[in-house]
Amino acid sequence: MPNKVALETLALNNVDIVVSTDNKLFVNDIRQADSINIDSVDSRVAIEESTEAAQVSSIDTRVAAEETARSTDVDSIDTRVSLEESTEAAQVSSIDTRVAAEETTRSTDVDSMDTRVSLEESTEAAQVSSIDSRVAAEETARSTDVDSMDTRVSLEESTEAAQVSSIDTRVAAEETARSTDVDSIDTRLASAGSSDSTSIASLDTRFAAEETARSTDVDSIDTRVSLEESTEAAKIASIDTRLGMEENTTQVATLALASGAESVEVNFSSDLSMMAFYTTPAVAAMMRNTDADASIIIPMLVGEVSTTGCKFVFSDNIVGDNYKMDIIVTD
Image 1: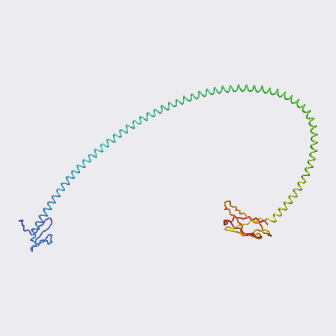
Image 2: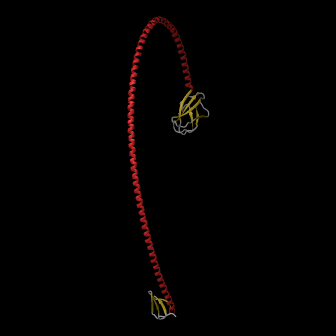
Image 3: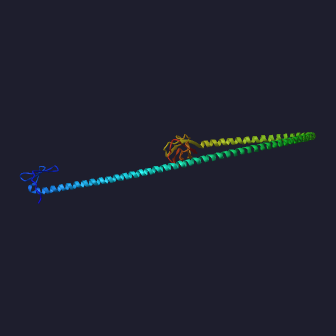
């Protein structure tokens, strides 16, 4: 049997459990059950205490496990820190090694550059020496050329002297030949003088004959000119007559055209100031414009022409005020 304890008030973990005089159970002043259930309450309290004790034990176990895990983590962190420090030390060592290698390479490059500079200086010295040699060779060649030129000048001067002497000889020969020619010319002039005298007499005779013939020709020319003048006078009179007739039968006038016009009716007298026609005339028209880029418009005669006027229709509407129509009317 369970143990029974007679208590007025039971306090567990700040929880007051009281049984009243009328056997009512109060927990923290809250009625729970009759006193007959106190054993059950005791059992429950015992279970709660066991549970709390178990929970406390579990908490302690978990706290211990957490502390153990934390200790393990700390050891792991220490291990990782140690590894990181080792890695960094290795990297620093590698960097130092690479820096040393770079310095060695740079030193080698510097030595190589010094070697190349030395080679370049040697090459330049050799080139300068070669240039000096070539300059000396050029000066020697030039000196040889100068000597050759002097020799050629001397030869040219000798040749010119010989040519001058030859020219003098030829001039003397030419003068002698000219003197002989002059004597020959004088002889020929004398002969020609006699011949000229005879020729002059013959020329005078021919001139007289020519003058006689020219006088006859002049009379003939005067006659012909007179006939030509008469003929031209007759022709001029005929031309004037014909022009007068044309002026009386053909009349020309210009008509300004308005922009937008499609056709135009022309009155010969009032629109063109022409004289009256007694018979139906022939009419022709041409369009013109002062603008070189203007469109070409053709006037077309429509209907019948009368003695007083006619009508023209245009191939396109008139655009602008620069179009004019020249009208020719012939009776």
